[in-house]
Image (cartoon, rainbow, N blue to C red; front, side):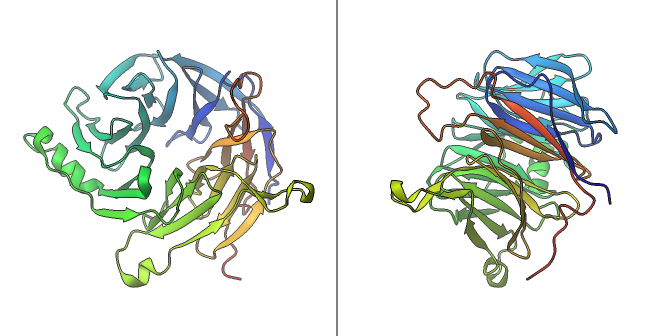
Length: 353
């Protein structure tokens, strides 16, 4: 079994990282979005501990999220300037798909339906038909400000303020997009839920087997839930504490609680990784309800995580967080991207205790 290795990417962003993501068709291609107004494209050299900066794509304002499209040459971004953009990574051409009334927090692409969904602080989703980029997107009003967004093969999960969670059915959205008048479509959530977490949701990730999702909060907790709306299925959901440290006795003891900023599921084994303001990354077995391992502490807060499409790599975005006094926040020189090449069974669950 090949041992795991880890290395730091040269030429990282100069400000805080908002997202990291691997290409759907290229294990070695990575995008990183940043508050420095750029999206960075890296290529990992096969068989080496090195990732080369291929290009960077400047925006007018900080980039809050990025995702790949149908292939490794297409990307979509969410920006503080209220725009949703498509980037041709081969030519560098940027095209505005739609404009929200307030900053766009998240974008997610559904390869099964050639659909892009953006979530904005104007309390709306825009559903874009990427096969017809000039077409008008469907606008869905939300009851709260969205903070996290994730898609499974058939569902998209929107986590909002006030513990609101809406789940939409992707085939239903696709049908509406293909109708004669998509803009007039009356879209309602497939399910409306209250978050299992009492505090603000920071991240959401969907299981690769389309069975459910995990959410995390600013209060050092993760919840795991299943889509199936039966009593038996809902009885399986659970939440647990994580990313906490014991405070010194001279400071009164107890726990120092950190936000869980990032979640990502392994595409092969279905286990998931979490990253927190405590600077640590942990691997969890969702079915067995157990922590599998915790990696060494990183120098700053873990802001973003992503597995490659075959589960070989784990990208870790590290930068200063807002967990301490941040009146003069400056992440320059402290923002780092780490790539961990996993051992063959490193992320494989071990089953129930």
